Image 1 (cartoon, one colour):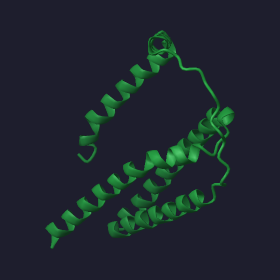
Image 2 (image 1 turned 60 degrees about the vertical axis):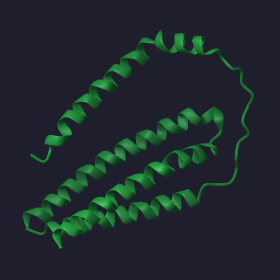
Image 3 (image 1 turned 180 degrees about the horizontal axis):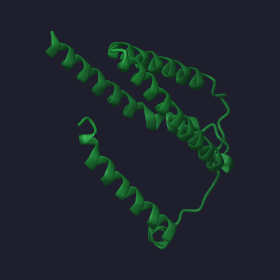
Length: 151
């Protein structure tokens, strides 16, 4: 019984990740096709700020709620709370996708830069190199510690 539950949960999580990675790039490209190309950077920046702030608030709130459930010995209630929250977010996400207006902006003409010029511009940008180094260090830190978080 316990082994079957573990297999089902593992299969469910893997299926959810596969489904997420299968549609995320398609939805991202489709959703951005409705944003005016001249305002796409501003739109993406605001979207990411809202996402980061909301994620911090949500993580803190869920942490407090799960701790409250755990302190009274009701860990199953915590999991049900998390599942209900995920369901609410999925429904909200679906409603947001349905509310995208059907106005596709035409692609503008653009000049094609040679690859050598693009690479020279990218790798001569010190700010970009700094961000790449910090991202690598962050990922090394995250992936070397994530296995020990349960300990």
